[in-house]
Amino acid sequence: MPRGVLFFHVLIKGLRIKRQANIQNEKILSATNTGEQIGFSTSVRETGNKFVARLSHGSGAACAMRTDRAIAARRKTDAPLAADRPKTTLAAESSGPLLSIKGLSVRFGAIVALDNVSFDVKAGQICGLIGPNGAGKTTLLNCLNRLYQAGAGTIHFAGEPLLELPRHRVVSLGIGRTFQNLALFQTMSVRDNILTGGHCRSRGGFVGNALRLPTAGREERLLRQRVSGLLEMLELTAVADVPVSVLPFWRRKRVELARALAGEPKMLLLDEPAAGLNHADLCELGDLIVNVRDQFGIAILLVEHHMSLVMRISDKVVALNFGCKIADGRPVEVQKNPDVIRAYLGGEL
Image 1 (spheres, one colour):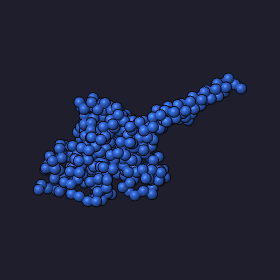
Image 2: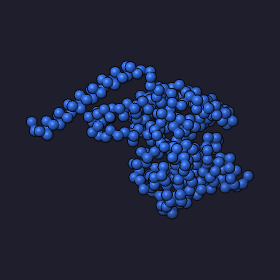
Image 3: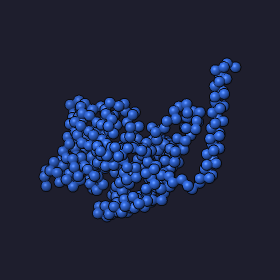
Image 4: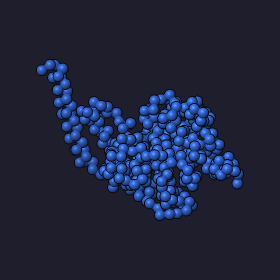
């Protein structure tokens, strides 16, 4: 037998023996430590149903009161989750904006989609992005995802010049997204769809996963544990092994949200998450978005046409019209802005 082939066989056999030993050790540790681990999924199971229970109907004021009570309860019960969240250096990011857009312009031939748009989003902030149809909201999100190439301007995310990065680096940098039109793998199960969202955080590599090395095995176990927590949080456990194609629209929306969260983003881009939902579900969606921000400490850029939802949960609101920024500030300020009123109603009240 050639020496190279013999060496390869010995290497594979040694790795298999090492893997079997690691599995045995893990079984022993598992037997002695059962019930002692405090993880993401356990914490969510204890508190999840308290703040995502389905609402029948309610006024905006009732939804706001319910949100305040839910947030206060979560802050008392969800303290252990801080150890499970990725270390995103929020302290360093709090000194400046997480996302900084300066002079962004996009043109499609003679059509100006974005014209010199500038605004910032801080870490942990919910920023509502509003405007009539065709204002440039989705175009801006596509620039953040590097799906569109900006004609002018700069975008910095966590200190990195985003427009200089290849588009496959965006997710690993910390930007997750949901879409207007659902982009799920229809023949795959709910669990497998969510697992794909965590691929960007794996470090095992092709060889490690092919040989089932201990590092790859640990990564997969941690990812599956995280996915189980997300399934519990978004009330998808009962349909975890069901193909996505058979689910109702609102459940598929949650699957896409869970997939985005599986990538451990620092910022979540939500493109019209309330589209297709009835009025009874809007309060629940608002509570869910606030909960995601509080639990994971991430920033959220929310594109939405339901003004009651945007104004209730946003920390700041940016308004666009015909590709230009017409307002930027607190929700109560933007609501009273004459340019915003004119853009939506065609004249001042």
